[in-house]
Image 1: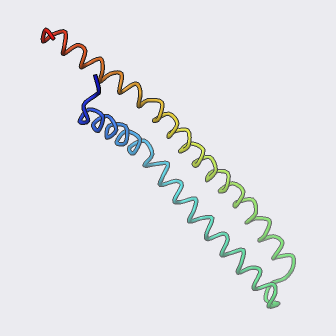
Image 2 (image 1 turned 30 degrees about the vertical axis):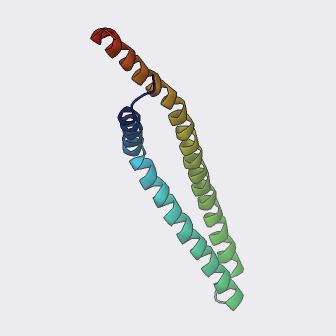
Length: 117
């Protein structure tokens, strides 16, 4: 017996809602990381412009570059971890889908037994 479309849609909605709730904070952190990364890249470009114009000393430029490089690496690691977590989440959802379908099929079998065929 095929599962009813309503059940299938309901379970997909439940999965989506649960993952949406769990990912809200991660999404906020991810957006913050992206904004910080963008600001650091702008600061890096500004420092390069200043040194080329002669408005910044070489030592100051190297200090800025060193500071920015470390921060960028940390942010890029966080962004990569977020992407990996999303990929793992999708894989888990795909694995859960058959379980929900089994549940629907079980429900239908029980209804048939209770209703006497």
